[in-house]
Length: 324
Image (cartoon, rainbow, N blue to C red; front, side, top):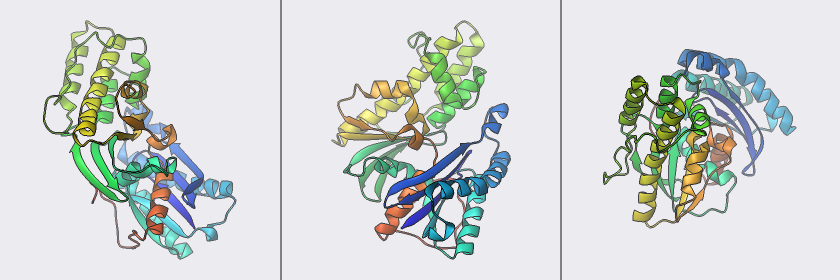
């Protein structure tokens, strides 16, 4: 069985091929055009997807040494994400599906992230606590079993990746902001500024980053600290906020395995501090942390093999949420 996966939820254009639950070919194109705008411009992103998808698909198929007729299923992200970007991918996938006469499988982007760890750790056994941290989402999940998830906490306002991006913009750094703040923070003093750790004593597993972002804005406007110290202290506050609730969930649910996925999982300071926890912490490789089509193709094939697919032509994009 060969599954072609397509990912266009935001500003990465991804195409991948999965066979026997192994990724045999993939390519992800990050849309660098958004750097000059300081953030993703939805209309530009959707046009870029339309421009890149045909060429990337040909490239991936050629590298796998197969033909279009060898593909058995097509899987495509249909949400959550930017509506225009999602529709670009869905339209392309529907055209391929109709032209080849093969089934099309809609895939939830968040569920794909939750299962991305299995691409490299197929023997991993639930239950575990999954911290999903990206530009658009900050969530805590209990993964109880195959396709069995429970959302126990999420951000009440900004996602932590969004807090990184907005903080970086205030510091006049490039987009995307997370890696830029991480780079600037290397030579900074993480203890210089005592930024708040929002909801740290709250009994829930929810997060909040809007107040922390406001604290950074006020700090920059005072113009009394060096940017490297602001970046280091701000990053430390975000990382601490993530770990406090993550560790709390691991202990309260008596689960000893934690999974970190999503783009912010690539942050080295986060990884360094997680090493100090008593639990076993597992990450997907860096290439599976950011948005990619590998996880889309993999999850679709996993669902086919377990008779858990929704093969339908009557679906469209949605901007938020996950049905569990």
